[in-house]
Amino acid sequence: MWEAMNSQAFGELDRRRKELATCFLNFPNADSQLVQNQDKIKAFIILVHSELESYFEGVAAGIKSKFKQEATMRGGLENLPVAFFLFPTKAPEITSEYDWTRRGSKVLKEFETYLAKRNNGIKEKDVLTMLLPLGISHQDIGITLLNTLNDYGEKRCSFAHTGRSAHARWILDRDNEDLMSSQLISMIGSLDQKIMSQHIGLVV
Image (cartoon, rainbow, N blue to C red; front, side, top):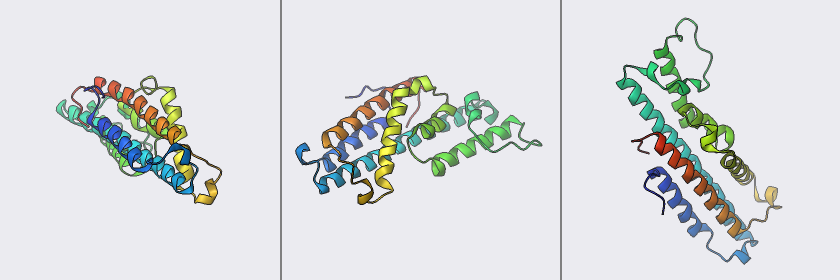
């Protein structure tokens, strides 16, 4: 049971991973090598990846909305946290975008577009692009979590974008994949607690 300081979004992520494990990993581990069970394991990995991606996007969107509301209450988007202005955008228009309000508006819009349309997964570059502008540091995220997300993202890509013949060399083990996904969720749970402690009142 996770502590109350975890977000609702994390609770849903944890619940969904268990639900997917029950649905797709419902065979003896000794039968993992059977073709139909290999397909089930791959489906499990792909769907867990989708839940992970949705979690990170949802948390980032929640913090962004909180920042926007707080900045507006303080007088305008020029009051967004400094870290938020580090989000990569197109080159500013010299004639107008040194105005911090306009710059804040542009950064906010492009960040929203990134979350809605341009984010491509859960690898290090994806997670850092979503979280660093929100003031969540490399140290908060941790190199172990980033490396594990990279590995999981690579594995998902191997199955999601090719047919069975292209990854016939992979023999996946049910217990290993269940354990790996569980450990990944646990690491994200620790990060989630840090995020919630930094953003009191955040609802995601």
